Image 1: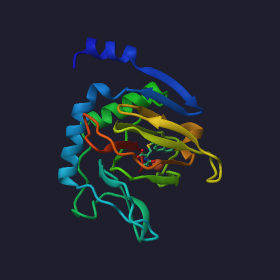
Image 2 (image 1 turned 135 degrees about the vertical axis):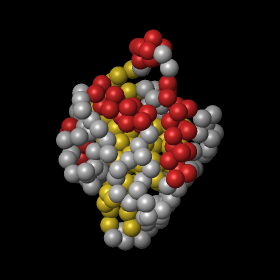
Image 3 (image 1 turned 90 degrees about the vertical axis):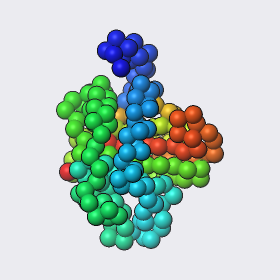
Length: 216
Ligand code: MD3
Ligand code: FE
């Protein structure tokens, strides 16, 4: 992509501050959608998508894989980041350059310069897959934001407060949306409602979500 085309596309991208610490870059990832999809394929050929079990023994409906130096895992030993993929018993796949570039550019745009993620969690939702309300708190330093990239079928996202009992707001996450979750938003409860069946030209019957983290 040329620099001119990039500026033209970015002029059209809408930047909204949705809540304290939440910067929404609607459609921001569209220029990279094909490359992102082939990078996801490459990552998943090395470390396959798998449905992990929670410490309580429930199989998650979302299938996950990771790339970068650290990957997030859950099993009966708990939730944690580690350098090895428990399936391949090797290092996670390297973070594709386009991934880290997109994440740090988005974070910079949102007011978090110097963001260099060391973990990218790749979530794959098939129809019916969902993620209950939770906080992301397995990372070392909550001063760094989390950057999320949505690809494929739209899903209703739930954005709660700092207590599980706070009633969540609903936001539709759509193909290409990039959201930077920092500051006071970083520890808010959030989740994803069940994916409705559909067909997307880029991802078929699935939705993918990339979350970039500075975990270590
Ligand atoms: C708000 N993923 O992987 S992305 C997760 O769509 C996760 O797959 C969802 O929650 C998904 O942990 C939501 C949006 C998101 C990600 C991380 C957050 C919102 C967040 C961390 C703090 C606050
Ligand atoms: Fe989360």
